[in-house]
Image (cartoon, rainbow over all chains, first blue to last red; front, side, top):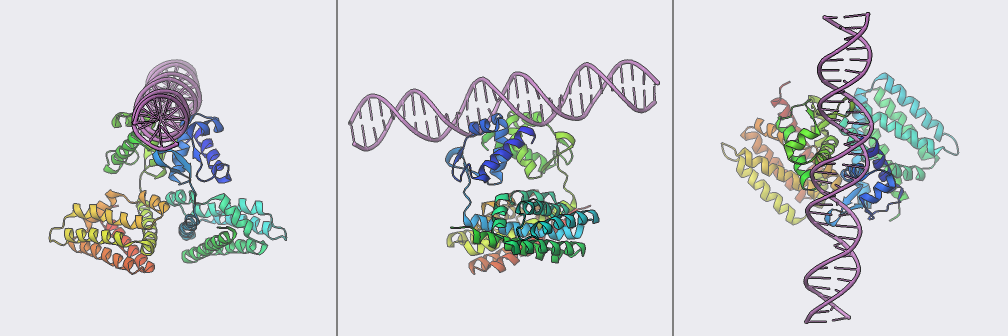
Length: 213
Length: 213
DNA sequence: CCAGCGATATTTGTATACAATATCGCTGTT
DNA sequence: AACAGCGATATTGTATACAAATATCGCTGG
């Protein structure tokens, strides 16, 4: 997937996640091509990928609609993410090298600094938190796992979760990251798995509490 | 994905899984278009999907190669499949309806019959085994889970595993299916999860024993 | 004989044209 | 007024043409 396709993918995905293209609204290739400033061909490739990732669904005969994620869907996404990311953490604990461990510590130091103040820097938290989880996933050294997780980690979902977190919860999140680093340094896969499972499931409950309906 | 795209997908996938296109061999769009009797456009769509499912990988600049699955890759695939399919079984136990339970029993009755003889009918076993697992996955009622599992269940891998099984192991497999049906009928998610986990992991070890290198 | 380089050829990426199919609205009939 | 049938329109699916990127191979110079 090269230039135009990737831009189309990012653009359409952003339309969906920002809410500009609300659930159930139709996505026509030509309109998207206009918006993205490319032809239909790369738009189609982007749509096929979004379809595989269940961001869009096919309605009665072939028309594409923005998918509508129910409360149950979101719960299932969090559960799958908890399973897969915990598995990634366990693998990472067994495989991570010293240099990556240093990166992880540095990353979490930035998170700790961002949330240590009375008025936490949520923007930095979001960026570094994402990076932290990416490092873990990458250290798991399983492209298949990484691909599955990529379609499961939604920044807007994380954002809503973080918005619900107060300073205390953000700090606890950073603390859990620290414990995960300890588990990795100790090469303790079970420990890492348990910490990550709790980490994600707590996020799920915070998200649920923040979500009406 | 309509007619030509789907045929291209099935055709190329079959080329890869049959070994006609061995690991590492290059896949050029035009050649595949000739083989499939369609133009490059549907071939490209098929390749994008195969790429997402990790059947093919991108080499140095943009050329596509048939992926080479290492022993570790296969182990990771089995582990992921065990996790996800066990999760599917747990969900299925909570959601399955009476009619589907009847289908499941009928399916496993055919499996039991096929493997009950001294000379087991492996072909029937393979067809009905696949159907059995599909029913469970479908009863889990999670399109996301179903999509993830679809890319993980390789018929050639299952075939090699079954080929390694003797009559006793095939019969045990059928028995495990029966236990899974019991767990579902009892609405016992933990039981279903445990049975499915063991079921897949045993298959993995049989496969490993059958695989040189 | 080998390294570096450039022309050629191959291959992928993107746009566009065309075909097939479904949707929607209109008209005419009952 | 309601509905069937039909035609216009919109949308997707496929093929092809062209552009850009990349590899291949032969040439030249050392």
